[in-house]
Amino acid sequence: MAEVLVRATPLMLAALGVSVGFRTGFLNIGAEGQLYLGAISITWLGMTFPTLPAPLMLVLSLVLGFLSGGLWALIPGLLKAKFGLSEVINTIMLNYIAINLVGILVRTSLKDPTYPYPMSPMLPASTNFLQLLSPTRLHAGLLLALVCAALVYLLMFQTTLGFCMRAVGLNARACQCSGIAVSKYVIISSLISGGLSGLAGVSEIAGLHHRLIEGISPSYGYLAIIVSLLGRNNPVGIVFASLGIAALQVGSMSMQRSSGVPTSIASIIMGLVVIMILSRKSLFRCKEA
Amino acid sequence: MELVVLSSFLAATVRMAAPIALAALGETISEKAGVSNIGVEAIMLSGAYFSFWAMFQSGNVYVAVFAGILGGAGTSLIHAFLSLRCKADQTIAGLALNFLFLGLTSFLFLMQFGKTTTLPSITVLKPVALPLLSNIPIIGEALFAQDPFVYVLYLMVILLMVFFYKTEWGVILHAVGEAPRAADTAGIKVHAVRYLACTANGVLGGLGGAYLTLVKLGFFQENLTGGKGYIALVAVILGRRNPLGVLIAALVIGSAEALQIRLQTLGSTIPSQAFSMLPYVVTVLVLMLSMGKGHNPAALGLPYERDKR
View (cartoon, each protein chain N blue to C red):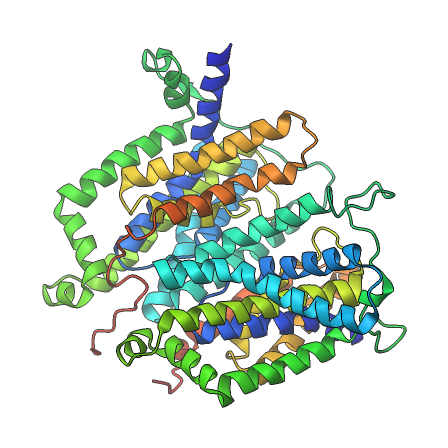
């Protein structure tokens, strides 16, 4: 059960990011890459300033993680807002670039010289998140994710900024006509969207791995899209959806251990779930305009 | 000596570009009809898996190619159903398909072949050198001493150029993508055209996937396409949905890929990831260069509903 929560943490953070993007009409497929950038940032911070006190380290790593993920998402965001380039393609390409970037870094500047395998050294204890239930791997990243969910809710539904962002997502053309600077909100949304995914990367390193390794994310970034869709881009929905998807994943792994069913079954189920959601209107004749 | 290196590099470029170009041509047809399918990756994976499976079972290339085409077309039709009949968001439907087929192909593969240390493999297609043409220095080997798929690709480019710009069918296709309501008023069955376009997309994408297993690799593994479907989408945008342009765009990206493989084998101290990154970086850069000039079909990505305005 704790393992489900551990897995749900990065999903929740990344999906919150994706949902902010979706609400503004910015299809952020790049949560995966933004997550990796967040992970790189905290590793760099921990290795460069190992002597910082823990509270300062915590704040810095969160800020830096948010910024690095956000800036990575800002590239496609700017390209979309200013030049109308498809953010879908750009975010996907940036994912591959980020994954390879981690591969390069753990072999060169962030490599642990005393260890033959490509990974960074253990980060100083000051970067680590609090462990919540000692024998399990549950860490304070979950609390971070829940706080972020509340913040995203407040931002999107209680502030003018959030209102404008949602309006842009609903009808960019009408917003343009009524004097709302569409591109500004697309850029802001890409920044927040990527930033939250970056936090997912920070929480994975700080809470779980404590060092940068290749493949820290079993495509959390892509799963986040499904989570966001399942949660109907609503922070509360996302919290529950991420728990559901995480349970599905953990379940598929224990199924493989016990009865040899390949874990890819989880990916099949998720694909089918989304297809069902998309086709429900005409298949089941739901009343919805 | 230099010439030999250059000519083999060019040949590798064509081999890298061929699957991307095939899938991209398919997506071009689909996008011209107003259906944007992000699920090219799924189409290619499905084509790759089913052609490999059929080749392994039957040993007959024609059966294998046919299976690849069927796999691709089937995948594309799921997307067509979701986006045309259910009027779902086409991007999300495409993403869902990518997920589904990433899981499905590796699941089927594991079920069929089990977990083995040696990958089950098939013999790959041999290149066929065209007489005379293949003797042209430098480009001869690259262009005319390739496998049959590449010749099919050339043929497709020519056929599509004629189809798009010289036939009434091409006009109908454009009409459906640009102004579906006007097309409907003129008596064109919008959905029928779109379904056909999606099928064509699946056939070509399936061929592109089949290329990967039947010609290039000779084996199947999880996530074999590794983003080639997405790169094909970029080739479509870069080539401005013009078949020749798409081919050239695919060649540019293919050359980046051929280059990164050459660089990796040089054995420098730079991590190989720096080179694997290259095609993706080139893709983003080239995409930036193309900005502002693209012109999307007006109804791209929009479902057509007859009774709504």
